[in-house]
Length: 107
Image 1 (cartoon, rainbow, N blue to C red):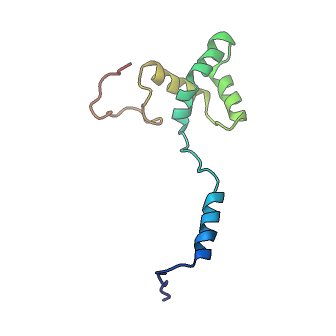
Image 2: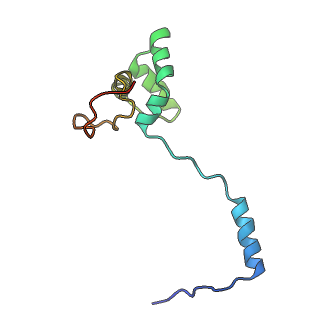
Image 3: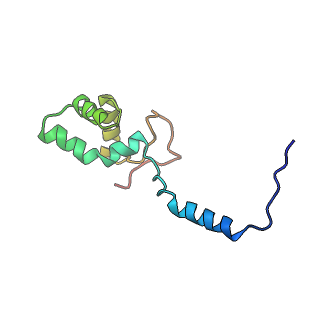
């Protein structure tokens, strides 16, 4: 079995190389949203399409799929009903169950 040797010292050239490489690293990707979180972020736009432009949940879902957010119309309907009830931080599609004793929404 090969054991890695732990370096106790490094050359200035190594430090310079590491420094250069670290500076060249791209910005870390931000945390990705769950589909439920994305729908909550888009709730106002989705409701506007439904109320002012006549889109169904299924039609909105089809448009969203074109841009990389693959959800069904039913998922939109359920998620937006959750938002409307003030449960915007509800789970990701699990039905029933307890929310740790929470029985209301703080609006």
